[in-house]
Image (cartoon, rainbow, N blue to C red; front, side, top):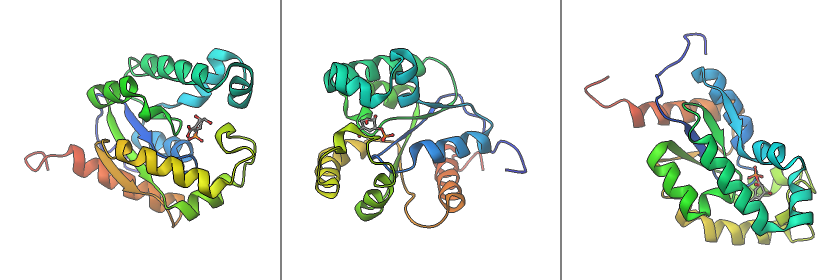
Length: 185
Ligand code: S3P
């Protein structure tokens, strides 16, 4: 944004939500807009494991992936103010969720099911939980299980529809109203 950082952050900003919600693509833009570094938990897991997420699932299984995910996020949360995009399942872990709620600003990026289906189908094979599945049915099942936990995030922002710029503007507005108390305004 032309006017520079809107707010000073003392804690990380964590983006969570379903596969296809745009956590990484919006996270990069949010980091740029706020003058904060962007980190992607999935990319950090891949770096630590030196293999892709599909390979981790294939060689070591989901439980090993989840364990690595929990440890990587725990480390990232100690690394100061930044924008951190999570994988869709990360916030389901009780320990991860509790740490995020205590140490970060958390934002659930909400997108309607039809839009999620459309988006994830652009990259078949990227997400092991969807491979060989009825994608819509699987996303719907995951959504039903996860949304009550996503709802514990500090903020929920609808980022479906419109352009990335629209979604980014909604995100920044929600963050501002969450962080700026009336006496600060
Ligand atoms: C997963 C989401 C993926 C990745 C892994 C598992 C999930 O990340 O962490 O495939 O359980 O929803 P994205 O949400 O970035 O696709």
